Structure formats: structure tokens, C-alpha cells
Image (cartoon, rainbow, N blue to C red; front, top):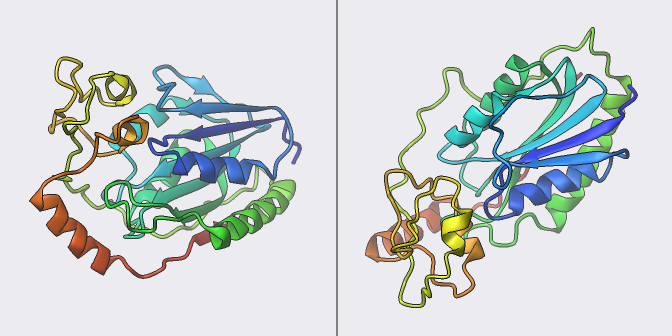
Length: 260
């Protein structure tokens, strides 16, 4: 199939999901545009033609893709448009995130030719999978991209079938993450965290605090803080971190799915 344009789409508060998507996109040539949902929320409909390739990546939060992303992706429409999907998780489980993303894409007119689950540093417990994606992951990403390219060459939008991936339907209920980041005494009230927060959960009047009812624990505020003030603090976090490290110490490998 002749592809005339590449569209990358991702939500990447800590930068790792973007790395996965861009690594996949390197295999494909042609004009490329990006939808960074942190910087460019999809508030109006975007239509992708059938000769466009969509490469989309979403982080996994509590077994699902972020609710705000699922809502935004309803505005991304295809016309039997081929797509490659990736979900990125922090070495626990991806649960129903991949099948949820697949179903969203199918409903909006995309035909998934391949999909993968990839591991990155955990967004809350930073010493879990700290160096992922690593060298092995990057090699697998390259192989995944190459095989996806071969499938795309033979792709026929009129005879495409549904891609089978792991997951449950109905999807698992996303759990409530009780741990929320906050600022400590190093905070200088620079306001960068206020600007970057995708859910507007930080008030410039008191940037050390976080609105717990709207925060999704994405870690964007931690990533951008120039003073390393923002983070997870307190005894509850220390207890949870110890348990999580023990539970999720196993080295997990990417899982790949291809259209046959």
C-alpha cells in the first residue's frame, strides 16, 4: 500500500511513550505530523485519509488508557486508515489498555495492522523499570517496525480483518490511585508545573499542593520541575513503593501482535 503521510499521536507526560512512537515511526518515510496530546489536546475532529499511516501510543494508568485521552481520541477519525498502536506501562500489567485502544481505533474508522505493549520507567515508582526502554527494547521496537512495514506493503483496506490482541471486554474498572505528587520546600513557585498539568490540578496560588480529585498521577509536573521539588512524599508512598518494587521486580518483555 502506498502511504503518503505519517501521523504520530501520543500522550506522554514523562516522555517515554513519545520515545516509543518516534522509534516506530523511524522505519517509515514520508511527510510526518504529530499530535502531542499534552500540548495539543484534540478538541475538534481530525480526519485522516486512507493513504495516511497512524502511529499511536498511549500510557497505561491502572490498567486502562487515560480517560481524558479516550475522550480526545473520539475526535480522531479515519477512513479505513491503517494504524499501528502501542501501549506503554510501568512493568506491572497493561490489563485492558491495548484492547481498549484497539476498539477505539476500530470504532473511529482505523484498521490496525499491528500493536505492541512496551515497558518504560514507572510514572509513580521511579525505581521500577528505571532504564526502560533499554537496548533490548529498542532492538525489539526496530524489528516490530520492520515487520509492520512489510504488513503495510500488503495491506488491503477492503479485505482487512480485525487484529486480535489480549484483553477483556467489558474492560476492567480503572482503580483510583491514592498517591498524588506535591511540592516540597524547594518549590520556588515558578509555575511550570501549573502550565504543564493536563488536568489543571495545580493552582498557581499554591503550587506545592495538588487537587487530588482531578490529578491523574501522570508525573508531568515532576518531569518539568527545575528544582526537583515535585514528587511523591510521605510514609504511605514509602510503604507502597516497597511493596510495588517487590511485586513488580520481574523483567517483563514487550508483547507484539500482527495482522495475518
